[in-house]
Length: 313
Image 1 (spheres, rainbow, N blue to C red):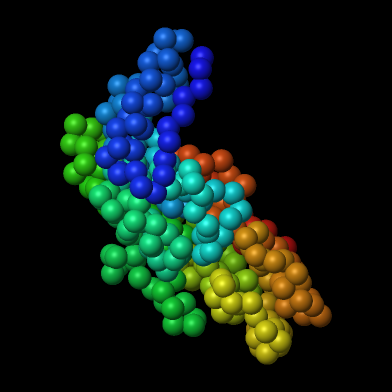
Image 2 (cartoon, rainbow, N blue to C red; image 1 turned 45 degrees about the vertical axis):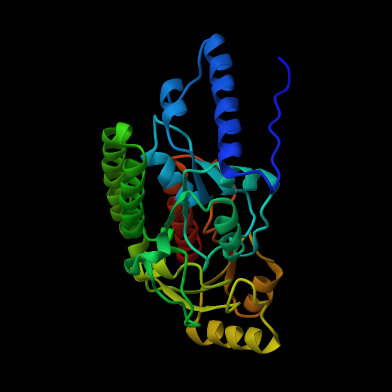
């Protein structure tokens, strides 16, 4: 089969790109149908469904759950990349230009996406999760804490908001979106109860984190985080900050210091040195998890397991 290419350049209009993308997708679907079909969403549903782009893996998992059996949303930031300083790739630009709906947490998490969204996805519907006042909480430094997905109750609200946005765009699949959202919400309520039971025995055990990424989780389950090494994701701690966090770890008798895979682990070792605190890792994004509907539950269970394993050993 000959290679199909679709040119994209900054001067191309969204309509031109959208037409080319739809033509390419139709050709791919025809080819797949000719060789016996594919697993997952039906070809007809995929052809008719809106094109959805999502910023990070945990939110992508929730959106994918709502779209289950209809289409697969596009994930922008995968792997161990930090969303706080993410650089847009050409393929991301093409996806945004063709999008019907963009779901993102907001500029507090991915400031580098704010201008590209306006320039490339200006005609797409945009669901900015932090626009909902119920999602907003502040970290120790007084800034908005954008890590809202780490609270399953807020994840349930995200699912409902995503379902409404999809139904407005694609009423033909409205019943499926509603049913998927109800199933996913029930699963998240069960997960919330599971995590509460697992974390309750270690809720009073003090620990420190690399940066204030876990406030939503900690408030939900009453955990005892005594301090953060860095005051912000883009702010490397100086000598004064390291002395302050070492003092907080010692005074609180912190049992663990948690690094993150998105940031330099040596700083966690320095902060814990001489305190007797164990070193472990908490990943708020699920860098090593495969993207898809199951990633959210897997992520929250992994975070809870790492907390319990370190704090109770």
